[in-house]
Image 1 (cartoon, helix red, strand yellow):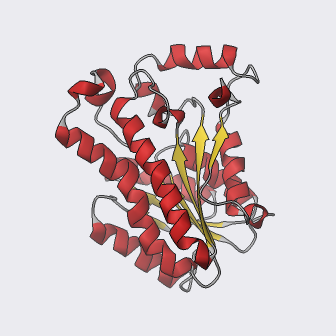
Image 2: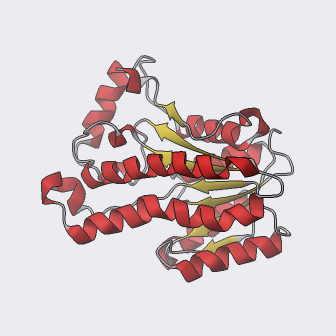
Length: 254
């Protein structure tokens, strides 16, 4: 029960295969109280059902491109949890499918800006609202990245640029908020079978190559990412901030 008494707000659950849902399960197992957001009516019912299975009735709509919706979420969280938030999970990323199909040099300006807004700037926007709820007791902010931020990965393209910006944001936010005992870290996961990942051309081949060549010689499970997030959310990681933690079976060393 590493997280007993802690309260966590999770952005990014879309379905039971979401990495954010694996994180939610690990946090709940360790005793955390959870709240969730969803983006769009299409996923609302599914997210509400998953939240209920985790003992939560705190489920809020939020389009992270809309500041008014972000403000509404944190206002409701402040009221529900008496002005205290311990953990913020940011598991959000989006790019139009054509950006994963075409050459990076052919990226469209509007797609590039949209990708950076949702996938990187949203962490800044959410952290700004979370800070006042964490200042008194400290807190942990966790986001998700991928090694395509550091290495040119086929078909990752604009998303790789967004993840590079996200990782840089982790360092700047950690440097600014550390004085309030607010820690900011990212988990860099290897290939996982999420619905979003399967939209990347060649993902199945990439996953097979990953399984055969990584140091552990096996595939990854979402729960491994979830358990790492539970560590980062807990006091066991109290000396860790501004860090990218790899959960990729050692792939990044090759």
